[in-house]
Amino acid sequence: MNFPLQVSDFNDLKECDKPIHLAIGVFDGVHLGHLAVIEPAVSSAKDNSGVSAVLTFDPHPSRLFRGDAGTDLIMSLKTKVARLHGIGVYVVIAKTFDKEFASISADTFLSYLLEQLPMLKAVYVGENFRFGQGRIGDIQTLIKSGSALGIDVWSIDRIKQNGLPISSTRIREALREGQVNLVNGLLGYRYISEGNVIQGAQLGTKIGFPTMNLLWSPECKPRYGVYAVRFLIEGSEQWKKGIANFGVRPTVTDGDAGEPLLEVHSFEDCKCSLNESIRVEWVAFVRDEKQFDSMNALKNQIIQDCQVVKSLMSNG
Picture 1 (cartoon, rainbow, N blue to C red):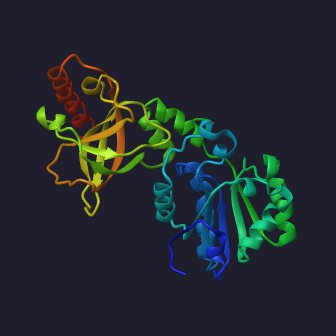
Picture 2 (picture 1 turned 60 degrees about the horizontal axis):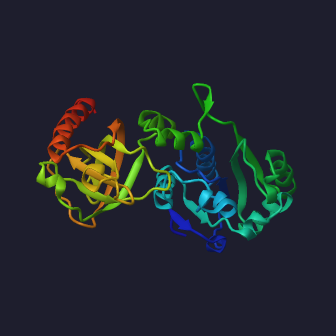
Picture 3 (picture 1 turned 120 degrees about the vertical axis):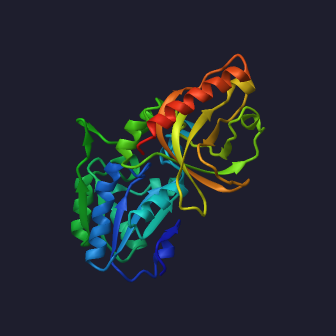
């Protein structure tokens, strides 16, 4: 088998002939708490000539039970898979959490996984992991099953920051409040946006601040506002500094823009074509999005924003 690999069906791994070390969880954001669970699986797989794997779910399992009221994800599946592969995970199993999977009893959950993955050697989960129909299975249930089946079960304590557990829920709340420094600290890396450049109205160009408009629509939306960013154009290895606005552009749309847009203005010369992919790292929150009385007032504010961001990023 060729690694790294992303699959959606257990059958795609039937031919795997090496011990599988499997971390299980939604792992939305792949934050520092998640790394505490995943990295031991990666390390053990390397030490034992095995395969490191992650079983994750997309969409969030809560969508099955609560529909549109379910949990909004911090990152897309594509971004999550890339992040997992980047930390050394060989195989990402992105399973749809459907009624059939949700109906598996806690007592038979591990035997079900072993049936699907005959080379399963060990599982790695967080201490608050719940599973099985009705979410009645806990670590002790898993250990009991593992003992009977010859599968090692590793449970990892929650990682805390300032006495509070690092969690995806906490990161979502911080993201919606524009607390980028906290978000980045809990993630262990800068918050990421990835999207393709789309045609804009060229209004930024007309006032001297051309932007790259990104087709990017996250489930969990950051606070509308202006941010200091770095970005990388696909095919390039050079990160560039810039300023971005995420929101509905009330000055030019009267607040009736529909879906928010991510607009990135570069402080450096760069060439970017329509449909090119751009990766954006969010560095700091600058101010809330607001409506101005005129385009000239908007231009003057952008000049001030750029000065603030350049000062923030002068050492980075």
